[in-house]
Length: 97
Image (spheres, rainbow, N blue to C red):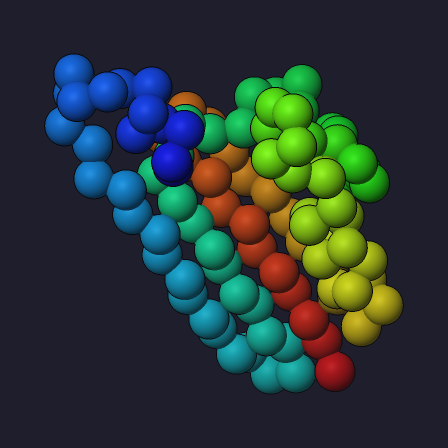
């Protein structure tokens, strides 16, 4: 979202929005983390959970955040799903008993 704000540079009105939803159904808990940023290009969706993959330039990021998050979720028997289109990205974390 920060990159989208910088890119628009006040040329268009843009209000960053981050939404977090939780749902418990039976023995399953889902957590949705959704934003209205630029979206994730299709060619990056395959790579985004890989260690050291980053879209940031220089020393702004190591590319470990999503990879480690995915490893922790998997270690607890869960999964992470990513849905993205221009203007919307939603990460859904699902954990079961």
